[in-house]
Amino acid sequence: PGCVYGHCSYAAENELKNQQFREFAVRAGFAEEQILPYIAPEPENGYRNKLTLHVNKAGAEVMVGYALSDGQTILQVAGCPLVHPAINDLLAKQLADPGFRHTLHHRMSLTYRHTERNGVLFYRNNLPKGTSWIRESTSCGELSCPADGFFQVNPGGVNALLQELGGILTEYK
Image 1: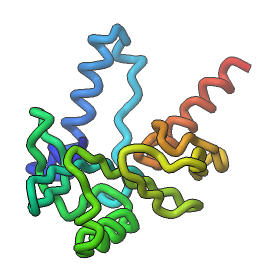
Image 2: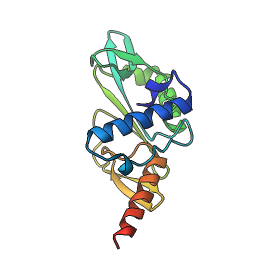
Image 3: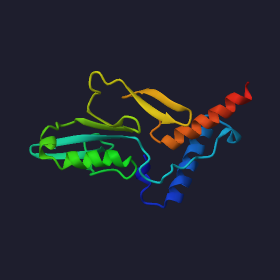
Image 4: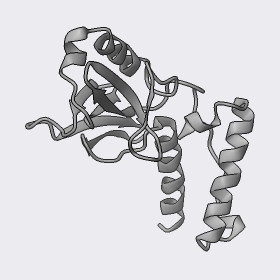
């Protein structure tokens, strides 16, 4: 996740990500000339469209945040600079509401998903019944996507991938 690079400049973060990806791709068997250049997210913040947080509840104490590597410890957060502002707005409103905090349970997951068309979809643990698809805007038009499935969390990244795929397919016409 991008937050692990918070200790360095945005330029250094992108260089590290590029280097890590290139090393991974070479280990996976790709030749250097096959590896596309890293595409940095634009804007620097607010570009991610999905956030999943976890709950640790002990008595009256409720912690909401990222689960650390031990799977037990929660790094409490009030928001994430990488996610779409609408997600942070909803999260802040919920965390400020004692009634909302009271409804949280230990080991619960909270998922926030944003699309331009659907706004913010929020669910606890599992997607609500009757909610199955959302619409994602891309450079190729709108795509339907399972609401709880994976879709590139960096909309600029998906557009770059689609452009590259279009170029590859054009070569094979």
